[in-house]
Image 1 (cartoon, rainbow, N blue to C red):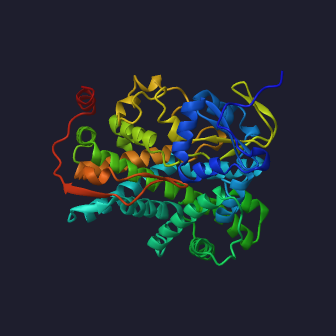
Image 2 (image 1 turned 135 degrees about the horizontal axis):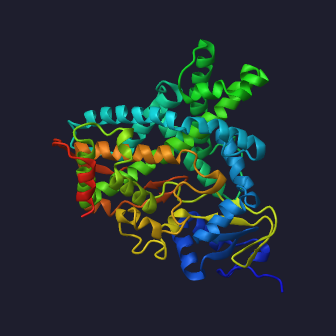
Image 3 (image 1 turned 45 degrees about the horizontal axis):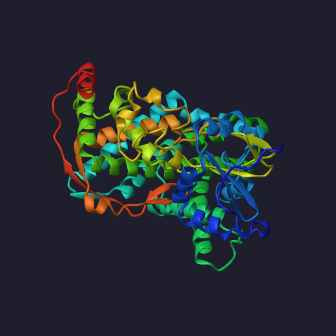
Length: 472
Protein backbone atom coordinates (compact mmCIF):
# COMPACT_ATOMS: atom_id res chain seq x y z
CA UNK A 1 0.00 0.00 0.00
CA UNK A 2 1.39 3.38 -0.99
CA UNK A 3 2.21 5.65 1.94
CA UNK A 4 -0.12 8.62 2.32
CA UNK A 5 0.54 12.32 2.81
CA UNK A 6 0.08 13.86 6.28
CA UNK A 7 -3.19 15.53 7.31
CA UNK A 8 -3.76 19.21 6.66
CA UNK A 9 -6.25 21.82 5.49
CA UNK A 10 -8.13 21.37 2.25
CA UNK A 11 -6.08 22.59 -0.71
CA UNK A 12 -8.73 24.28 -2.81
CA UNK A 13 -7.76 24.55 -6.48
CA UNK A 14 -4.50 22.76 -5.75
CA UNK A 15 -4.45 21.20 -9.21
CA UNK A 16 -4.24 24.72 -10.65
CA UNK A 17 -1.68 25.91 -8.14
CA UNK A 18 -4.10 28.52 -6.76
CA UNK A 19 -3.58 27.97 -3.04
CA UNK A 20 -3.90 31.63 -2.11
CA UNK A 21 -5.41 30.96 1.30
CA UNK A 22 -2.34 29.17 2.64
CA UNK A 23 0.05 31.57 1.01
CA UNK A 24 -1.69 34.60 2.52
CA UNK A 25 -1.72 33.12 6.02
CA UNK A 26 1.96 32.27 5.78
CA UNK A 27 2.80 35.79 4.64
CA UNK A 28 0.67 37.71 7.12
CA UNK A 29 0.82 35.65 10.32
CA UNK A 30 3.11 32.64 9.95
CA UNK A 31 3.50 31.91 13.67
CA UNK A 32 -0.25 31.73 14.31
CA UNK A 33 -0.77 29.70 11.15
CA UNK A 34 1.95 27.18 12.03
CA UNK A 35 0.75 26.92 15.65
CA UNK A 36 -2.82 26.24 14.54
CA UNK A 37 -1.64 23.70 11.99
CA UNK A 38 0.35 21.79 14.60
CA UNK A 39 -2.45 21.93 17.16
CA UNK A 40 -5.06 20.70 14.70
CA UNK A 41 -3.16 18.19 12.58
CA UNK A 42 -0.28 16.98 14.75
CA UNK A 43 3.49 16.67 14.53
CA UNK A 44 3.54 16.48 10.73
CA UNK A 45 1.06 18.51 8.72
CA UNK A 46 0.75 19.17 5.03
CA UNK A 47 -0.47 21.99 2.83
CA UNK A 48 0.25 23.40 -0.60
CA UNK A 49 1.57 26.80 -1.57
CA UNK A 50 1.09 27.12 -5.30
CA UNK A 51 3.18 24.36 -6.91
CA UNK A 52 5.02 23.45 -3.68
CA UNK A 53 4.14 20.63 -1.31
CA UNK A 54 4.90 21.92 2.18
CA UNK A 55 5.43 19.80 5.32
CA UNK A 56 5.41 21.45 8.75
CA UNK A 57 7.41 19.52 11.37
CA UNK A 58 6.85 20.04 15.10
CA UNK A 59 8.36 17.24 17.16
CA UNK A 60 11.91 16.94 18.51
CA UNK A 61 12.51 13.43 17.12
CA UNK A 62 11.36 14.51 13.64
CA UNK A 63 13.42 17.70 13.81
CA UNK A 64 16.41 15.49 14.63
CA UNK A 65 15.66 13.35 11.58
CA UNK A 66 15.50 16.30 9.17
CA UNK A 67 18.41 18.32 10.57
CA UNK A 68 20.77 15.56 11.69
CA UNK A 69 20.29 11.95 10.62
CA UNK A 70 18.99 12.77 7.13
CA UNK A 71 20.38 16.26 6.73
CA UNK A 72 21.96 15.45 3.36
CA UNK A 73 18.52 14.69 1.95
CA UNK A 74 17.14 18.00 3.24
CA UNK A 75 19.46 20.83 2.10
CA UNK A 76 18.36 24.45 2.18
CA UNK A 77 15.73 25.35 -0.38
CA UNK A 78 17.45 26.59 -3.57
CA UNK A 79 15.34 29.73 -3.69
CA UNK A 80 16.45 30.67 -0.17
CA UNK A 81 20.08 30.06 -1.07
CA UNK A 82 19.81 32.19 -4.22
CA UNK A 83 18.35 35.12 -2.27
CA UNK A 84 21.07 34.77 0.36
CA UNK A 85 23.72 34.78 -2.35
CA UNK A 86 22.58 38.27 -3.42
CA UNK A 87 23.42 39.59 0.04
CA UNK A 88 26.44 37.55 1.11
CA UNK A 89 27.92 36.02 -2.03
CA UNK A 90 29.07 32.41 -1.73
CA UNK A 91 29.40 32.43 2.04
CA UNK A 92 28.78 29.76 4.65
CA UNK A 93 24.98 30.09 4.48
CA UNK A 94 24.95 29.44 0.74
CA UNK A 95 27.64 26.91 -0.16
CA UNK A 96 27.32 23.14 0.08
CA UNK A 97 29.51 20.05 -0.03
CA UNK A 98 33.28 20.32 0.15
CA UNK A 99 33.35 24.10 -0.31
CA UNK A 100 31.01 24.48 2.68
CA UNK A 101 33.13 22.13 4.81
CA UNK A 102 36.32 24.12 4.11
CA UNK A 103 34.58 27.41 4.86
CA UNK A 104 33.12 26.12 8.11
CA UNK A 105 36.52 24.76 9.19
CA UNK A 106 38.15 28.15 8.58
CA UNK A 107 35.34 30.02 10.30
CA UNK A 108 35.41 27.78 13.37
CA UNK A 109 38.83 29.19 14.24
CA UNK A 110 37.29 32.37 15.58
CA UNK A 111 35.07 30.42 17.95
CA UNK A 112 37.80 28.40 19.63
CA UNK A 113 38.24 29.04 23.33
CA UNK A 114 41.20 31.39 22.90
CA UNK A 115 39.30 33.54 20.42
CA UNK A 116 36.12 33.57 22.53
CA UNK A 117 38.30 34.99 25.31
CA UNK A 118 39.06 38.00 23.13
CA UNK A 119 35.36 38.58 22.56
CA UNK A 120 34.78 38.21 26.30
CA UNK A 121 37.19 41.07 26.96
CA UNK A 122 35.55 43.19 24.26
CA UNK A 123 32.10 42.46 25.66
CA UNK A 124 33.19 43.58 29.12
CA UNK A 125 34.81 46.77 27.84
CA UNK A 126 32.03 47.96 25.55
CA UNK A 127 29.26 47.03 27.98
CA UNK A 128 31.01 49.12 30.66
CA UNK A 129 31.19 52.05 28.23
CA UNK A 130 27.48 51.67 27.45
CA UNK A 131 26.56 51.62 31.15
CA UNK A 132 28.64 54.75 31.76
CA UNK A 133 26.52 56.53 29.14
CA UNK A 134 23.38 55.33 30.90
CA UNK A 135 24.30 56.85 34.26
CA UNK A 136 22.72 60.20 33.41
CA UNK A 137 19.67 58.80 31.61
CA UNK A 138 16.20 57.94 32.90
CA UNK A 139 15.30 55.65 30.02
CA UNK A 140 16.81 54.01 26.95
CA UNK A 141 15.58 52.64 23.62
CA UNK A 142 16.85 49.15 24.21
CA UNK A 143 16.99 47.78 20.67
CA UNK A 144 19.04 50.79 19.58
CA UNK A 145 21.41 50.29 22.53
CA UNK A 146 21.86 46.56 21.99
CA UNK A 147 22.46 47.10 18.28
CA UNK A 148 25.17 49.67 18.98
CA UNK A 149 26.75 47.41 21.60
CA UNK A 150 26.99 44.31 19.40
CA UNK A 151 28.16 46.37 16.46
CA UNK A 152 31.03 47.80 18.55
CA UNK A 153 32.04 44.34 19.82
CA UNK A 154 31.93 42.75 16.37
CA UNK A 155 33.69 45.65 14.69
CA UNK A 156 36.66 45.36 17.03
CA UNK A 157 36.67 41.54 17.11
CA UNK A 158 36.21 41.04 13.38
CA UNK A 159 38.08 43.98 11.86
CA UNK A 160 40.20 45.41 14.66
CA UNK A 161 38.41 48.75 14.18
CA UNK A 162 35.01 50.38 14.25
CA UNK A 163 33.25 50.81 10.93
CA UNK A 164 32.52 54.31 9.75
CA UNK A 165 28.86 55.33 9.52
CA UNK A 166 27.99 52.60 12.01
CA UNK A 167 24.38 53.75 12.43
CA UNK A 168 23.80 53.72 8.68
CA UNK A 169 25.41 50.28 8.40
CA UNK A 170 23.21 48.90 11.19
CA UNK A 171 20.15 50.22 9.41
CA UNK A 172 21.40 48.75 6.12
CA UNK A 173 21.71 45.29 7.68
CA UNK A 174 18.17 45.56 8.97
CA UNK A 175 16.85 46.70 5.58
CA UNK A 176 18.67 43.89 3.76
CA UNK A 177 17.38 41.29 6.24
CA UNK A 178 13.78 42.48 5.99
CA UNK A 179 13.77 42.68 2.21
CA UNK A 180 15.48 39.30 1.94
CA UNK A 181 12.71 37.80 4.04
CA UNK A 182 9.94 39.46 2.05
CA UNK A 183 11.43 38.56 -1.32
CA UNK A 184 12.12 34.96 -0.37
CA UNK A 185 8.45 34.64 0.64
CA UNK A 186 7.14 36.39 -2.48
CA UNK A 187 5.41 34.76 -5.44
CA UNK A 188 7.80 36.13 -8.05
CA UNK A 189 11.48 37.01 -8.23
CA UNK A 190 11.42 40.60 -9.45
CA UNK A 191 14.64 42.11 -10.86
CA UNK A 192 16.47 44.70 -8.78
CA UNK A 193 16.42 47.30 -11.56
CA UNK A 194 12.68 47.86 -11.20
CA UNK A 195 11.88 51.39 -9.93
CA UNK A 196 10.30 50.12 -6.70
CA UNK A 197 10.98 51.68 -3.31
CA UNK A 198 11.99 48.33 -1.80
CA UNK A 199 14.40 47.66 -4.66
CA UNK A 200 16.04 51.06 -4.31
CA UNK A 201 16.48 50.54 -0.57
CA UNK A 202 17.86 47.06 -1.11
CA UNK A 203 20.40 48.13 -3.73
CA UNK A 204 21.52 51.17 -1.72
CA UNK A 205 21.86 49.16 1.51
CA UNK A 206 23.83 46.37 -0.16
CA UNK A 207 26.15 48.92 -1.76
CA UNK A 208 26.76 50.70 1.54
CA UNK A 209 27.54 47.47 3.39
CA UNK A 210 29.74 46.03 0.64
CA UNK A 211 31.63 49.29 0.09
CA UNK A 212 32.32 49.65 3.82
CA UNK A 213 33.63 46.12 4.25
CA UNK A 214 35.56 46.16 0.97
CA UNK A 215 37.33 49.32 2.11
CA UNK A 216 38.35 47.60 5.35
CA UNK A 217 39.61 44.47 3.56
CA UNK A 218 41.59 46.39 0.94
CA UNK A 219 43.01 48.70 3.59
CA UNK A 220 44.29 45.74 5.58
CA UNK A 221 45.86 44.15 2.48
CA UNK A 222 47.53 47.41 1.54
CA UNK A 223 48.97 47.92 5.01
CA UNK A 224 50.58 44.49 5.08
CA UNK A 225 50.05 44.42 8.86
CA UNK A 226 48.94 41.35 10.79
CA UNK A 227 46.23 41.69 13.45
CA UNK A 228 44.75 39.24 15.92
CA UNK A 229 41.22 39.29 14.52
CA UNK A 230 38.85 37.39 12.25
CA UNK A 231 39.76 39.37 9.15
CA UNK A 232 43.42 38.41 9.54
CA UNK A 233 42.46 34.73 9.79
CA UNK A 234 40.47 34.92 6.58
CA UNK A 235 43.12 36.85 4.66
CA UNK A 236 45.88 34.47 5.68
CA UNK A 237 44.01 31.19 5.58
CA UNK A 238 45.87 28.22 4.12
CA UNK A 239 43.52 28.19 1.13
CA UNK A 240 44.39 31.72 0.06
CA UNK A 241 48.12 31.30 0.73
CA UNK A 242 48.47 28.02 -1.15
CA UNK A 243 46.55 29.14 -4.20
CA UNK A 244 48.43 32.44 -4.57
CA UNK A 245 45.15 33.92 -5.74
CA UNK A 246 45.04 37.49 -7.12
CA UNK A 247 43.91 40.22 -4.77
CA UNK A 248 40.47 40.57 -6.37
CA UNK A 249 39.75 36.88 -5.81
CA UNK A 250 40.93 37.02 -2.20
CA UNK A 251 38.84 40.12 -1.51
CA UNK A 252 35.71 38.51 -2.95
CA UNK A 253 36.25 35.29 -0.99
CA UNK A 254 36.89 37.14 2.26
CA UNK A 255 33.96 39.47 1.66
CA UNK A 256 31.54 36.54 1.37
CA UNK A 257 32.59 35.21 4.77
CA UNK A 258 32.62 38.64 6.41
CA UNK A 259 29.17 39.50 5.08
CA UNK A 260 27.82 36.14 6.21
CA UNK A 261 29.22 36.38 9.74
CA UNK A 262 28.40 40.05 10.14
CA UNK A 263 24.79 39.80 9.00
CA UNK A 264 24.07 36.48 10.73
CA UNK A 265 25.83 37.26 14.01
CA UNK A 266 25.20 40.97 14.36
CA UNK A 267 21.47 41.11 13.66
CA UNK A 268 20.34 38.00 15.54
CA UNK A 269 22.46 38.67 18.64
CA UNK A 270 21.28 42.27 19.01
CA UNK A 271 17.64 41.19 18.64
CA UNK A 272 18.10 38.34 21.14
CA UNK A 273 19.61 40.78 23.65
CA UNK A 274 16.71 43.17 23.11
CA UNK A 275 14.17 40.49 24.05
CA UNK A 276 16.33 39.45 27.02
CA UNK A 277 16.34 42.98 28.44
CA UNK A 278 12.60 43.25 27.79
CA UNK A 279 11.94 40.07 29.77
CA UNK A 280 14.21 41.00 32.68
CA UNK A 281 12.69 44.49 32.89
CA UNK A 282 9.21 42.98 32.86
CA UNK A 283 9.77 40.27 35.47
CA UNK A 284 11.21 42.05 38.48
CA UNK A 285 11.56 38.90 40.59
CA UNK A 286 13.77 37.34 37.90
CA UNK A 287 15.83 40.53 37.64
CA UNK A 288 16.38 40.65 41.41
CA UNK A 289 17.49 37.03 41.50
CA UNK A 290 19.99 37.65 38.69
CA UNK A 291 21.28 40.70 40.56
CA UNK A 292 21.77 38.68 43.73
CA UNK A 293 23.72 36.03 41.86
CA UNK A 294 25.91 38.61 40.11
CA UNK A 295 26.65 40.32 43.40
CA UNK A 296 27.53 37.03 45.06
CA UNK A 297 29.65 35.70 42.20
CA UNK A 298 31.33 38.89 40.99
CA UNK A 299 31.19 41.15 44.02
CA UNK A 300 31.98 44.66 42.87
CA UNK A 301 34.00 43.47 39.85
CA UNK A 302 32.61 43.86 36.33
CA UNK A 303 31.34 40.47 35.08
CA UNK A 304 33.95 38.88 32.83
CA UNK A 305 34.20 35.68 30.86
CA UNK A 306 35.76 33.88 33.83
CA UNK A 307 32.59 34.52 35.84
CA UNK A 308 30.17 33.12 33.26
CA UNK A 309 30.42 29.46 34.28
CA UNK A 310 29.41 30.38 37.85
CA UNK A 311 26.48 32.55 36.76
CA UNK A 312 24.16 29.54 36.66
CA UNK A 313 20.86 31.31 37.17
CA UNK A 314 21.80 34.11 34.77
CA UNK A 315 22.45 31.48 32.09
CA UNK A 316 19.05 29.95 32.83
CA UNK A 317 17.42 33.34 32.25
CA UNK A 318 19.22 33.68 28.91
CA UNK A 319 18.05 30.24 27.80
CA UNK A 320 14.45 30.92 28.84
CA UNK A 321 14.46 34.20 26.93
CA UNK A 322 15.74 32.37 23.83
CA UNK A 323 12.96 29.82 24.31
CA UNK A 324 10.09 32.30 24.35
CA UNK A 325 11.69 34.81 21.96
CA UNK A 326 14.02 32.87 19.63
CA UNK A 327 15.64 35.41 17.31
CA UNK A 328 15.89 32.63 14.70
CA UNK A 329 12.19 31.87 14.98
CA UNK A 330 12.08 29.92 11.69
CA UNK A 331 14.87 27.82 10.23
CA UNK A 332 15.61 28.16 6.53
CA UNK A 333 13.22 25.97 4.57
CA UNK A 334 14.60 22.58 3.51
CA UNK A 335 13.80 20.78 0.26
CA UNK A 336 13.95 17.00 -0.11
CA UNK A 337 16.21 15.86 -2.93
CA UNK A 338 14.63 12.42 -3.06
CA UNK A 339 11.45 10.80 -1.80
CA UNK A 340 11.60 9.94 1.87
CA UNK A 341 9.43 9.17 4.87
CA UNK A 342 8.72 11.23 7.98
CA UNK A 343 6.71 9.72 10.84
CA UNK A 344 5.27 7.15 8.46
CA UNK A 345 4.14 9.72 5.90
CA UNK A 346 5.41 9.97 2.34
CA UNK A 347 7.53 13.02 1.53
CA UNK A 348 7.84 13.31 -2.27
CA UNK A 349 10.97 14.58 -3.97
CA UNK A 350 11.30 18.39 -4.00
CA UNK A 351 8.90 18.84 -1.08
CA UNK A 352 9.55 21.75 1.27
CA UNK A 353 10.01 21.09 4.98
CA UNK A 354 9.44 23.86 7.53
CA UNK A 355 10.72 23.88 11.13
CA UNK A 356 9.76 26.76 13.43
CA UNK A 357 11.55 26.84 16.80
CA UNK A 358 9.10 29.47 18.07
CA UNK A 359 6.27 26.94 17.70
CA UNK A 360 8.17 23.99 19.19
CA UNK A 361 9.45 26.17 22.05
CA UNK A 362 5.86 27.05 22.99
CA UNK A 363 4.45 23.54 22.80
CA UNK A 364 3.06 22.55 26.24
CA UNK A 365 4.10 18.93 25.71
CA UNK A 366 7.74 19.94 25.90
CA UNK A 367 7.44 23.09 28.05
CA UNK A 368 4.47 23.04 30.47
CA UNK A 369 2.72 26.41 30.83
CA UNK A 370 4.78 27.56 27.83
CA UNK A 371 4.01 31.29 27.99
CA UNK A 372 5.19 31.59 31.57
CA UNK A 373 8.70 33.01 31.88
CA UNK A 374 10.29 30.35 34.07
CA UNK A 375 14.11 30.18 34.06
CA UNK A 376 13.98 27.18 36.40
CA UNK A 377 13.11 25.04 33.37
CA UNK A 378 16.84 25.13 32.65
CA UNK A 379 18.02 24.25 36.15
CA UNK A 380 20.34 21.26 36.44
CA UNK A 381 17.51 18.94 37.50
CA UNK A 382 14.68 20.14 35.24
CA UNK A 383 16.68 20.66 32.06
CA UNK A 384 17.02 16.88 31.78
CA UNK A 385 13.23 16.71 31.32
CA UNK A 386 13.39 18.75 28.10
CA UNK A 387 13.47 16.40 25.09
CA UNK A 388 16.60 16.74 22.94
CA UNK A 389 15.91 19.07 19.98
CA UNK A 390 12.88 20.67 21.66
CA UNK A 391 15.03 23.78 22.39
CA UNK A 392 16.75 24.82 19.16
CA UNK A 393 17.28 28.61 19.12
CA UNK A 394 20.54 28.05 17.22
CA UNK A 395 19.26 25.32 14.91
CA UNK A 396 20.77 21.86 15.02
CA UNK A 397 22.88 19.42 13.05
CA UNK A 398 25.71 20.25 10.63
CA UNK A 399 24.21 23.67 9.82
CA UNK A 400 23.67 24.73 13.44
CA UNK A 401 24.80 28.25 14.30
CA UNK A 402 28.56 28.22 14.53
CA UNK A 403 28.57 31.04 17.08
CA UNK A 404 26.26 29.42 19.66
CA UNK A 405 28.80 29.28 22.50
CA UNK A 406 29.95 32.84 21.95
CA UNK A 407 26.38 34.16 21.75
CA UNK A 408 25.39 32.48 25.03
CA UNK A 409 28.55 33.80 26.69
CA UNK A 410 27.95 37.34 25.44
CA UNK A 411 24.30 37.40 26.45
CA UNK A 412 25.11 36.11 29.95
CA UNK A 413 27.92 38.61 30.39
CA UNK A 414 25.90 41.58 29.13
CA UNK A 415 22.88 40.73 31.28
CA UNK A 416 25.05 40.31 34.37
CA UNK A 417 26.81 43.64 33.78
CA UNK A 418 23.58 45.54 33.20
CA UNK A 419 21.66 44.30 36.26
CA UNK A 420 24.75 44.75 38.44
CA UNK A 421 24.68 48.50 37.80
CA UNK A 422 21.15 49.29 36.61
CA UNK A 423 17.58 48.62 37.75
CA UNK A 424 15.43 48.04 34.68
CA UNK A 425 11.70 48.80 34.65
CA UNK A 426 9.05 48.46 31.99
CA UNK A 427 5.76 50.26 31.64
CA UNK A 428 3.40 47.27 31.67
CA UNK A 429 0.77 49.10 29.60
CA UNK A 430 3.39 49.76 26.97
CA UNK A 431 4.69 46.19 27.24
CA UNK A 432 1.27 44.80 26.37
CA UNK A 433 1.47 46.60 23.02
CA UNK A 434 4.77 44.98 22.04
CA UNK A 435 4.23 42.21 19.49
CA UNK A 436 6.59 39.87 17.64
CA UNK A 437 7.45 40.74 14.04
CA UNK A 438 8.65 37.61 12.20
CA UNK A 439 11.18 38.76 9.63
CA UNK A 440 14.61 37.09 9.28
CA UNK A 441 14.86 37.64 13.04
CA UNK A 442 11.97 37.80 15.50
CA UNK A 443 11.95 41.52 16.17
CA UNK A 444 9.76 43.54 18.55
CA UNK A 445 7.12 45.59 16.76
CA UNK A 446 8.69 48.83 17.99
CA UNK A 447 11.83 49.84 19.85
CA UNK A 448 11.20 49.20 23.53
CA UNK A 449 11.66 52.05 25.98
CA UNK A 450 13.01 50.80 29.30
CA UNK A 451 13.22 53.00 32.39
CA UNK A 452 16.59 52.77 34.15
CA UNK A 453 17.81 53.57 37.64
CA UNK A 454 21.55 53.37 38.52
CA UNK A 455 22.38 51.20 41.55
CA UNK A 456 25.14 50.91 44.10
CA UNK A 457 26.86 47.54 44.48
CA UNK A 458 27.42 45.91 47.85
CA UNK A 459 30.01 43.52 49.34
CA UNK A 460 30.87 40.22 47.68
CA UNK A 461 29.97 36.71 48.82
CA UNK A 462 31.28 33.29 47.87
CA UNK A 463 30.02 31.42 44.82
CA UNK A 464 28.95 28.47 46.98
CA UNK A 465 26.90 30.76 49.21
CA UNK A 466 25.45 32.40 46.09
CA UNK A 467 23.92 29.24 44.75
CA UNK A 468 22.68 28.08 48.13
CA UNK A 469 20.70 31.32 48.35
CA UNK A 470 19.50 31.23 44.73
CA UNK A 471 18.27 27.66 45.04
CA UNK A 472 15.84 28.59 47.82
